[in-house]
Length: 226
Image 1 (tube, one colour):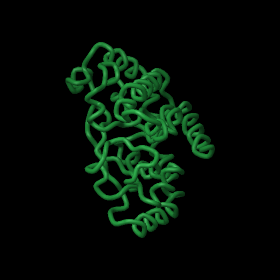
Image 2: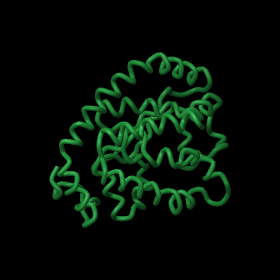
Image 3: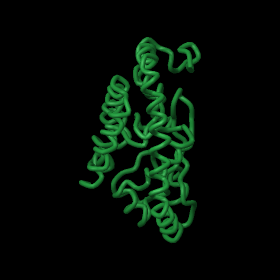
Image 4: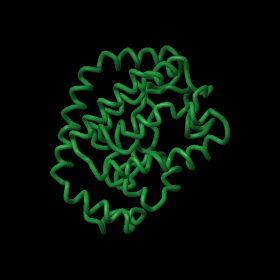
């Protein structure tokens, strides 16, 4: 996509600088996509028994679908539906905030265990296969928060959002931070989101398959430690 074909919301001087840098790394981006397809296919195959067990546990524990298809903002500022194993009661987004805190009453019993092990994110491998996400990249936000992005943050939408990211590792205990006291929405927008965006912009500077592999390994270690 040419720069002048980007959505108007993304066309600013800072985004153009990142766009030009990514144009010089087309080979790396192609390898990244091939790695995404191959690795996610193998992981889905290996994880299929776990998927079946999780699906059964979710259905037995509470009424509702197995997957929660929340709308997020992806590459080129386009909306897409993310696959997440449902960990909350049906229509949780209609009875509470977009962010989730540690002891959120909307979380189901099975959902609490799934979240603890970060298994709700594994289903996003399906998004990787359909091309709406990558294994590694800036985490996708809901439109509500994207509308509050500073102009430079829009550069993170030049690449596919990731199942994991350096921000996922840094804020692996985000729900505890949000429930520590104060207005959780304000804490997220003013304290957490700017750091996440900064890490996302740093990722664009050094994007490569090897870096993705490193972040994936760090993610697994972080989950095991949690």
